[in-house]
Image (cartoon, rainbow, N blue to C red; front, side, top):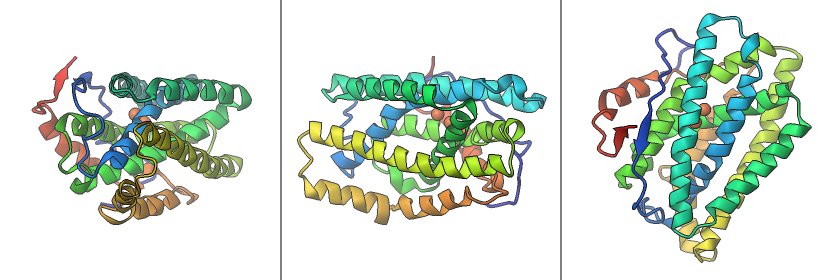
Length: 286
Ligand SMILES: [Fe+2]
Ligand SMILES: [Fe+2]
């Protein structure tokens, strides 16, 4: 599975799939068999995607004209297309959250305002460094989700389908923003220091926000004091299937000076998914 590659393998192709997922009418509270707190953990992540991915697109776009490699230029276009579709589908997911009485719209609006403020305070290089840090998170979370069937076992197939599709495309494009950073900002010296410094700050901010959003959703459902529900979430994240300890190990790889996302070659997940997704009952071409 792991190869030492400091570049994107030639076999990787980044495909924009214009798919719509049927989320209307599916219960956003009970879709995960491990309970409300686990369902809302995923739901909270979904709240980040439309605005977060718009931030990624804008950040990469600012460097698009400085990319020289024709392949990387094409990959940037595909990356933008994929993230735009993710934003569209997760917005529909989030509308389903709002329609079921959850404070999704308020949380999304709050995030949009925070990101707009942040953008005014930082340089384009910082925005790109934040993007590659969060793209590393999406890639390593996608790796867990695709590699461990227990994570989505017994879930509502419609919601599982959107998470799998998103994980597949995050895997496909996991190195695009990173390669843009390497080609335009650099990889050693100040560029390396900016990359790792930003990862530390982004990790702290991102997980505090996820926790905050998650807590808002759980509280809105009157389950903030449900200790059994919280325990089920802790068990899900840390023990069984327990993706968090593996996530920490994958996170640490980012601090190597010669780190590249494709040093962990998980393209096999993409190929396997491609063979089956066309038949997914919950997905239809847009
Ligand atoms: Fe995405
Ligand atoms: Fe992404």
